[in-house]
Length: 114
Image 1 (cartoon, rainbow, N blue to C red):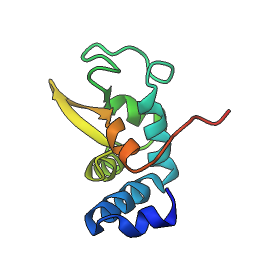
Image 2: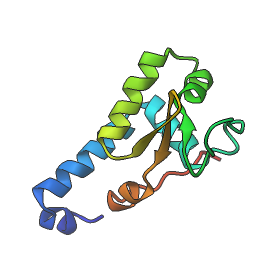
Image 3: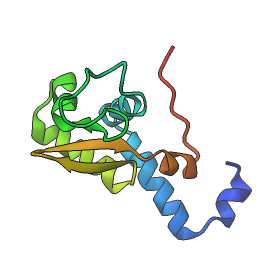
Image 4: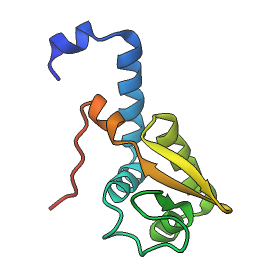
């Protein structure tokens, strides 16, 4: 995005983009997003819910990060409030799926490091 485009953007649009960038500024949240965008190589198949169609169970994210469930939930809340993920309850768990259109709208392209 060039400067002229930013100047012509609405205040709401710029605020939404800032929220996306703020959410992705944490290395933990950025790592979670990279995993969620391509979950099959990073997570084992789940008993409930498909990794791509339904999202990844928060318990799987907790295990992979080796962080407490409340800490991971706080990170997921930040990603969710920026519109980057959507939570879906299946049985007693929340499954998170990336919202690719929000990344696209903010002009964000995420790729795993090579």
